[in-house]
Image 1 (cartoon, rainbow, N blue to C red):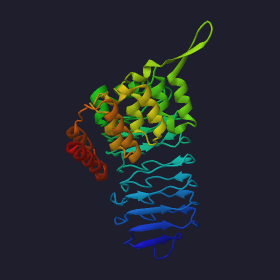
Image 2: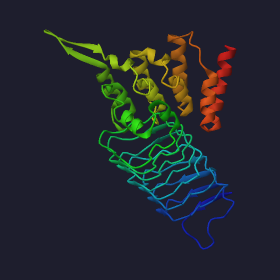
Image 3: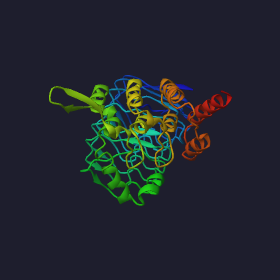
Image 4: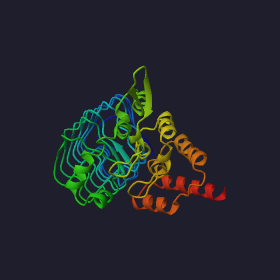
Length: 346
């Protein structure tokens, strides 16, 4: 059933709603408007919407597989999508506030915190068991209690040196605990993740910066002073690995934003990034599939492997098992399996 929501009404929202379109006249979705709508799969939020209320789309049993957020949206309140999303959600840079547990127990592989959010509230991404990548801007002041607890698949994330942390923010973050032993060890390592690694840092924060391609090219081509001229030389840190064993290409493949030209620059200057494994034994290709990178990015990576490292052998079993353990959306795994079959037949 397709339903156009025009605001609160006496009879409420029908229980068999599958697709909903929130009318442009609606500026605020009230508390529990779509609470426990377990058949709801598609949500279209029109421009003009400013606020999503407490529990508005909560407890839909992970039924929502398609959702957009308009540029006009500014506030997402407590538990707004608790236990409901089974798809990525892309938040615009104008989001001003997000409430506690707003995205807890949702199923998506990566998440980008909008730059105006300087405090992550308690439990905001708790129990997000499929999330392997989290982008946090340099503006972050505080991360609340249990913000990412039980997000066991989390790998790609970085913290600022001056951020204040609540209790148990990374409780049961299995993959990170494997490397650093406890939450304090994880925090300390991730606060210093990019120390001395300017290229890595640029790539991680690329989605928050304008003109990143030119900045990256300038950073890669270091200039050294000579008596008569200035000469460029390649920044060697772009070939190094951070505390997670990741190269700039790993980080780029984890990102929520994929610019083909940025990929091209990284691979042209640091081709060995393609075949470098991180501390979990993963190549950048795994993260591109895991995060559902656009088809043109996947194709470019494959062509780069074929051109530069034609004898590269991929550990398909490890990649499929890793994604499967993290309850990755089936379409991501199916895309990987299709590629495996093509490679085998070739």
